[in-house]
Length: 327
View 1: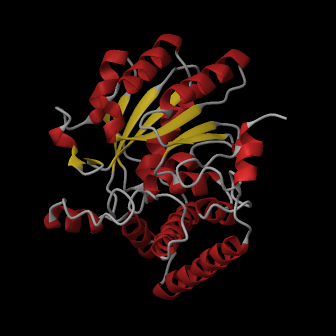
View 2: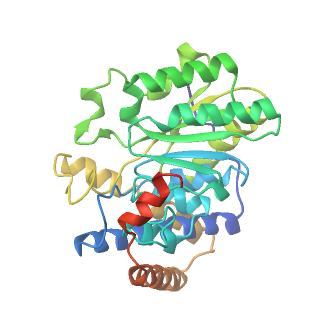
């Protein structure tokens, strides 16, 4: 296990793009919560606010041909990968124009055109799928890699260990990305896990295990890029532990009050938007007026996308049947 090395400097233009993407995800999820409280979201939601740097940093290290699987807290990864915002809103509201035609909801976002091959409601379910996708790339010799995002809780189940073992034995081009937000639903990680650094779990499978500051998009990108490049060269799988924090509760209207106030305050001070925004301002690439203008622009996009999605037709039982049974 190792700590991620210091990132190579990126251009302010690229950092500005990442800031824009993280802000877009944040505002999107603010709107999702608003829609949920208006009873317009079908089913549940799991927001990733505070974890945007992981989605954006890892996605920036990939090509459009690479494969991605996600967890139920996958809005950020879907948007960073390029999934249509209006289509996601429509999916959450159970509309026919949704990315899964309104039949999957928040926990089942998928888009084969983006090689986003699954958003899984079952904890850890995306890991073996990602190994299979990685092996398909290896057998074809096309240079693709496979990335799977999952939470800290998934490292305690058998599927995690089976997937890492198989990926290591077969030297599959897979990058395993832990979004360690310190809580498995409502339970602190240290009450269920005997170690502080989950990257240590890479050691018995003889793959690199790297601890990354998951709130620093530059460090996430650098670590992901190194792992992706290694996989493309035939060096096999890697495990990245991105230490981060979700600003909201686990799901629905959970206020997250089981977390100590001082802990929450400390992590809010390390908001990935604050970190990246401060760097841009220090470089003279983002003024307060520019920031306000960007927020206004993105908020208008979010609001318009949600409004259009709300006007779409609701998916019906007939739609579900047509997608379940072959004629």
